[in-house]
Every structure is written in C-alpha cells, then in structure tokens.
Length: 178
Length: 189
Image 1 (tube, each protein chain N blue to C red):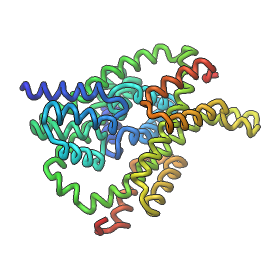
Image 2 (cartoon, chains in turn cyan, red; image 1 turned 30 degrees about the vertical axis):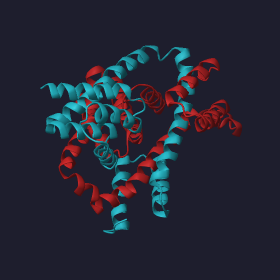
Image 3 (cartoon, each protein chain N blue to C red; image 1 turned 180 degrees about the vertical axis):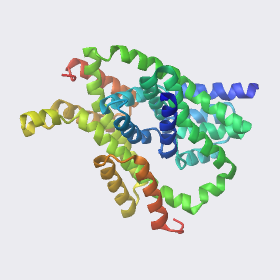
Image 4 (cartoon, chains in turn brown, yellow; image 1 turned 90 degrees about the vertical axis):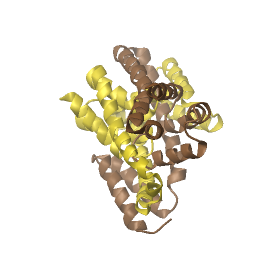
C-alpha cells in the first residue's frame, strides 16, 4: 500500500514542479524517478519518453502511466497518473473560478488581450521547434502544408486529418524501413 | 448529460492528439465551435493560464474547459476523459514495448503523423492570431487596409518573438510581461 502512496505523491510533486508540460518535465522526472527513487534508469526513462511521443495522448501522462505500470502493474499505472493530474485539477479549478468572477474587469481584459498576442508567439515557436523534428523531406513538408490549410479553412474534425495522415504515411512509405 | 459528454469529448481528444499538450489545441478549437462552450478568445486565455501554471498543458486545458462548462465535477470528468485513453494505450503497449517501437507500420504512420500534428498546431495558432493580432471586424466596417492589423499587437508580437530568441526565459515570464504591457497600454480597447 505504501508503494502506491509513494507513486501518487511522487508524481503529484512532479506535477507541481513542471511548468509548461511534456518536454519541461524530463529533467524533473530524471531527478525524482531516476536519481532519488531509483525506480527506473536513464535509458528506460528515455525509452518511455520516446514511446510517450509516439502513442496518442499527453506525453507526461503516458510517461507516468508507464513508470507506475512498471512498479505496480495496472493499478500502479493508474495511481501514478492520478497523482500527476491531481495538483493541476486543484490549481486550475481555483484559477478558473477566480477568473470567471473577474473576467469583466477592464484590467483583466487589457492583460489578456496582450497575453493572447504572447500565446501566438509561443505557438509559433512550438511549431518551429516541432517542425525541425517532424519535417524531414518533401513528403512530410507536403503533409504539414496540406494539414495546416485544411484544418484552418475547413470546419471538419481534426480527427479526420490525423487518421488521413497516418494512412498516408503507411501507404507512401509502405512496408519499407526508414 | 453534460458530464458524460465532457468525458466522451475529452476521451476523443486524448485518443487522437499526438505529440504533447499543444496538440490538444486544434481539437479544443473544433470542440468550442461545435458546442459553443467557449470562444476562440476564451481558448487563447485558457492556453495562457495553462502555460503559466504547473502541470501538463493538455491536462490543465481539460480541467479549465471542464470547469467552465460544468464547474468542479465538469473539471474532473474532462480530465479523466482526457487521460483514460492515454492510460489504456500505454497499459497495452507496455507489455510489448520493443515490438511496438520497431513495428514498421507504427513507424511509418508516425512519420506522417508528426508533421500532421505540427500542421494542426500551426492552424490553431493561425486561429489565435486572427483574434489577437488581426482586426477583421474593424476592417469590414472601415474598409481601410490599415485596419486589417492591430499594429500595437503586431509590434508586441515581433518584440516578443525576437526577445524569446535572445533570452531563454520560461514562457511564464513572457506571459507576465505581456500582461503588464497590456494593462499599461490598454490593449483591451
């Protein structure tokens, strides 16, 4: 039982310490899970991270599930994941409740109008960073442009574009190895 | 039943978003359009809050949207919805770790999924830019080409872009600075 508590609180702590999600989490995971708890080694952590990136879902959640599962099977995976999301649930709920009451204030409106501009730049930077890893040749460049335009100018669900891209990847690359 | 709908909608997002927190953004944009739960401006505000608070961005976004739609139970349902498919997929994959990683169909699918996910995020970013930097409604009233862009916002965006290249501060610092600039220069009006 104590091991489950340990999983829950260790991942809660990781959740509180991580600002900005997925990639920001790796150094903190390394310190908590590899160096302090010695639950996995560096190579295993890198493996989990790689798999977290190539399975659907939130990378941080995937990694927590993986490590929890390694320690204590399915229940461990669930406990570690709940630990990770627990602090966010409390912090974000508090902020959302606060903002709901103050959203009409002029100062809040002014602040958020400029913050939205900052968000654009942050997204642009993320796209540049992700693009460097994901756009490798003419085929991937074509996919990038097609999906960007289709998603922007149509109202169809992004699920459609994700499925189409996966099918295109398998059809174009066939059974070949990279 | 609003709670079931929240759980279901976020489970879909968890299942189809590939490549981390920001990848949920295009799905949320489409969810807002379909349900009317929040506007694109709300979404950009939520993203700013999610980036400025601890925790995974995708989880924070789910909690925020869930709370806005149906208070605390809504926040719980949306968050659980988001993580359920991730947990299920990983629990399955964990048992065949190496085989999954080296499967050529998985590799080739992800070879195309990654640029697609980048494209989806880019399109969501264009959506945010359209409300944060462009002033199309003003343009449609005046017909003056100079009114297409909010020039102050554009200058701020360019300044932030170059500042972020030079100084590797955490995004939350730039969000804070932007908020102060917004208040000082009345960006809301």
